[in-house]
Image 1 (cartoon, helix red, strand yellow):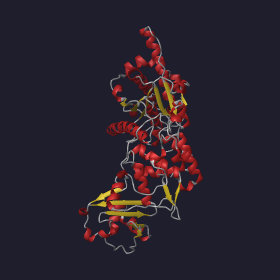
Image 2 (cartoon, rainbow, N blue to C red):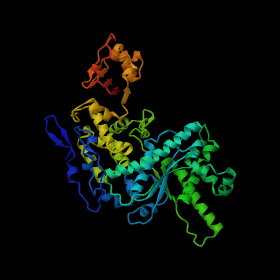
Image 3 (cartoon, one colour):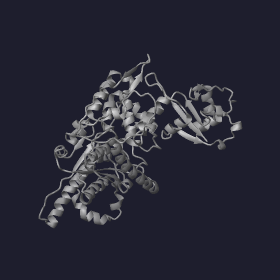
Length: 523
């Protein structure tokens, strides 16, 4: 069934007729994990369902080409250390890669900017290559100067260690969830690679500085270190550069060598500001292989190559770093950025970059993305491409089905002529859908003296505002209650809370102004 929109005259019109004509290819027989119908919202949608959007065989043009070339077309490649990566990631090549990217524990959660190199890892993993997510438990204590004009503020030891555990879990969860997301979109996984996570504190804690310098120091060239752009820019700044940050590239280079030697990792992925650190690792691996070959004089002196790849810096049309909202990063931790907030962030994507983001943050087939954008351009006001993007990213990060739930929440909170809300409402159904949105909060009747509780006092607690702010908002006509969003009028601040304000006696729905909603379950 094609998803439909109820038009003004009551007739249904199809927005995405192309979904019914997507071709099938028997070469790829894959099974899409079923999302139970009970979990899906029963409301009108103007975008195709997941099963309608991607069919068997839609990925054939994507997987029949060099993976690096394909990633380049998805805006996921900025620079590579060797052009052989194109031929060695061709489907006809038998070369296997084990690749890694790292993240330092500078915050308790990864953010959208961290996901670009992780998307590269996901694409490789889906094609049978092993991947490693590395958390910098050791290097995070030093601080990477790349892309920074000032030195990072050091975290307290306890906080840093807590961040290490959180980031390591997020790296693992994102990659594993990414595989499930790909399966749900019918991606033809013929042989999935393995997923690993590491903490570089595991090997750095046993290394003594004098031993390190005597063994590796002579293979590290200071002239190359000084020549890197990130170092030069800091040396010329008024704040200068400490030795701790200057040495960071040595630590990252050794990480690559350790993983190369002990875990057979041969490809490092990072942001474009990591190019100097990555090439330092490639250079160190080459030098150390030559050195140890001369010392041990093995019969077979074949030097195994290592490679590096960077992803572009993603920016908004105004030149700001993508993933920043009013100065705040968009995190993948659902407590820091709720699934609802994530969905809203992407549904508000400017038209100029929606096509790029569909390629970067989803694994939808390129041909499907082109058709989505073509249909979007015919009627941009419906924001169909943004709706698909928001659903895809929400599913990728928070699990299959979460995107549809957040679409349901959005259509309930903000019904529009092109996205009417048509569904039978009950408190229990709303609680179920809002459970993971990050909007729902819970109060107990016993926490209040409800026999003499001013509604303004309750609203102040719900909105986490002062009593004065709340009363001013009510006086200005900015509070709306219930399913019908009835304006709350109480100029004298005399209205008492009553259970009649609740939906089914248990759910309070509040809108403050035009955009801010609060959903409270009482028990």
